[in-house]
Length: 79
Image (cartoon, rainbow, N blue to C red):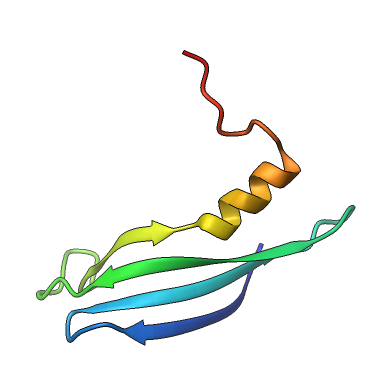
């Protein structure tokens, strides 16, 4: 899996949407790519990990859609 492309869309002084395109090129079979949107929120002070802020959410519609096309029933839950 590789990072193919990305775009940062600033929403406010403390938030941004990060559009990240991933791609997979398997040894056998057809490769594919998808874009996830990650929500970034500035956390103010630098944390123990040396970072300011955190990813608050991810929208992975294209990733899920492609996974379900390739592996039907992947997210079905039996109750």
